Image 1 (cartoon, rainbow, N blue to C red):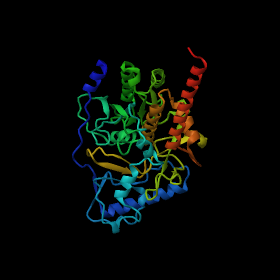
Image 2 (spheres, rainbow, N blue to C red):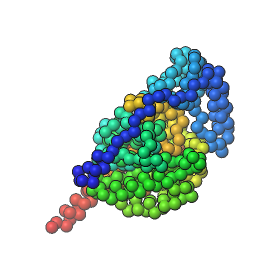
Image 3 (cartoon, rainbow, N blue to C red):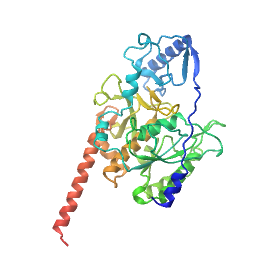
Image 4 (cartoon, one colour):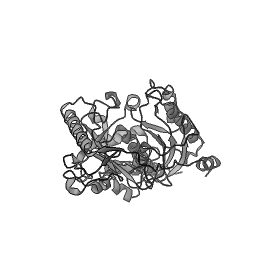
Length: 410
């Protein structure tokens, strides 16, 4: 380990966990009204193909019901919860809803990704970066954060771990939830929004990307960060994003791929999400439930290709991930957002780089489209087939090199 690397690691320290429970307390009557509102919105969404209001889930992560309540009229497919959610007895739960089962089932990406992990395809030795909100420690990624620093307006403010940071980190490298469970992370905590003026602001995101580039330049080539996940739109028209084109070009030159929400507009790399039925096998290709429209209301149609055969699909609904509320606590989101895609794609890239260090993001996209599972709304990534093709390509390349050496002896 060189001197620069030692200095970087020495300065790493995660945020503390916020101990108090900050849920909104509501009555059982208010819960009934809330459920009916969700049902109404879901019905409207199903009928209106142009609707962008996809985040129709019962958010028990933010709510606490006062007194006894009956949840049996709700749809099991719409319940978002965490380990602190106090559910009623089973007879008052929706048909087919078992919180423990949903939580454990949702930890798995599915489509037999775990079989790759069992073979040792885990992203081991790979380095990725994440730029997101403040991060507290969790069993999913404990001792996997090589570097942590914050870029905030007030550098002396005390920040607690945020929901978004724990979620994306565990989806990328989590021991149980992650795509690449043995990859390691350089983490940069930043705000994505100017809350004083209530406008998107990427000023500190760009500072973090600049810092990530500078760190990568100092690292030995075989220790460099291969990709950075940013779960945000990076449009030059957004405040703070004026130099994004310059930074993307510089990152590319040193082998650092930037994976972000609207990168289709600049790279032509299109992605979207899909849902899964938690009461069915998530390894079954038949259990890919396409999202027929936008994942959530924050995105726009120009974030992905109109030609669905050129769009990869990643599981984003019914995913379980680390909760910022406790070192060994989890959150299950019935409805995911576009934010869940970049960290999982970055994890897939880490797996690919473990097979072939020369692998590029464009080549990965092309291979995933060729080996994936065709649906009406895109190509779901088939991790096992994807990796098998990479391994075979590597064998073929090595064979060609050996043949050339044999035909041209020194």
